[in-house]
Image (tube, rainbow, N blue to C red; front, side, top):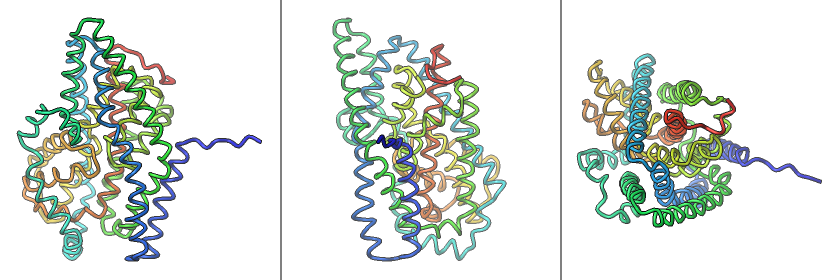
Length: 427
């Protein structure tokens, strides 16, 4: 008797559903239970972290090998610069569009107006310690040193710290240097990188076998800790963010994928389901990068020299969902504190949202300290961030999924703009 195998994405969806519902029900039935706290801290969170760490473990070597191979595959420095300019332009335009869309939503819905002074005080008190910690480090996260540090003193130290921008800069220089070597030497280096890349993808396969359990554990930990109660007082704000992300991901990005990428949308979203689910469960673009590259190359047929160049850059610089979230959050918190931001100030918010989204770390809650920087710059107390800390984990998961979708769309658009063919589009 042949027992049909359950596809991995079905197992991941099941894990996501079980973890979310299980955590929500547990939080409702046993609030403040020591047993539930023990389960979250000593079972669910460690299991989820093991899965997350297995993905993060391969990010630096994966970025190095894929980006280096992408650069050596391009060969021509002029072509490399052209593709870099196209990628950065795509990132900035779509990120700015997402931020503007977020501001439009919050100006129409005005969710901050429904936050009463009592509720504001309660939320600030509840999450004051987290807010104080974030405000304390916010000032150091966006300065001229951010750009200077892109050039690492020690690339090994940068890799050890997970500083992807510095790793990317070194890898770009390394890849260009390989193209200048005599052929007999460059072929050896490329052969080694190809073997290393294939080995890393095998490790990714090992990690994905843990995905259903890891996804269930991560989502259980979030919903068991915060439950669904926190959604009620912040329902309009949560709706604004999630609604905006849905429209951007399945509307704006879908139109770009269809119009400029030339892909059938049903095939596109079916193909990228693994990266979308991984992004949602880990809330980390960096951790999702291995599955993103695999979906782009094996599913969408993006040439390796494009995926290896565009996707590592996108994981650190292309943050559509983050920019939309930042725009909604900043205006929402200003409304909640009775501070009206004029059109000119909102224009500044868009510019700063794009800059901070591009410089935000591709890790869970990586944009939160940068949001505090913008809040303070437009006259909103930095401590206001405490109002959204209860729902931020859920919104972080959702916006990361949008970020990763944007990366995949960018890889298709850049491929076609370079006159290359996507081999799997079902067009």
